[in-house]
Length: 99
Image (cartoon, rainbow, N blue to C red):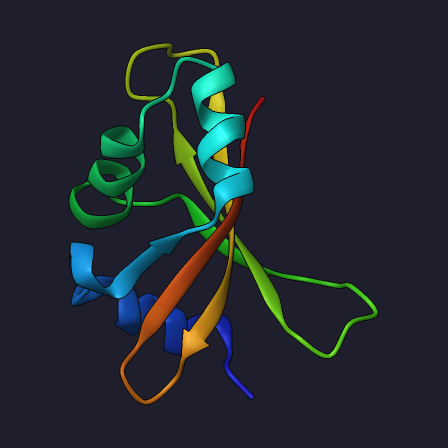
């Protein structure tokens, strides 16, 4: 089972090819005027505040990665993802929340 510490290591070598964005996440981010490019940029180039394992009653573990909003200082962005391929270190973005 992956831990938050393992995922921090994953993020150090993350590339666009290792990020899959779910259709729901695409639609949700567009509604909030936050493009797919912004998602890639945050995940690859910006330091995150924290990674938290989401406590859900499903067999698939999901994680939340928290960022400061790059354009609005009083807002945060939470990207919820799940490991898609552990051997290749690929993640799948499930949703994007701007709070």
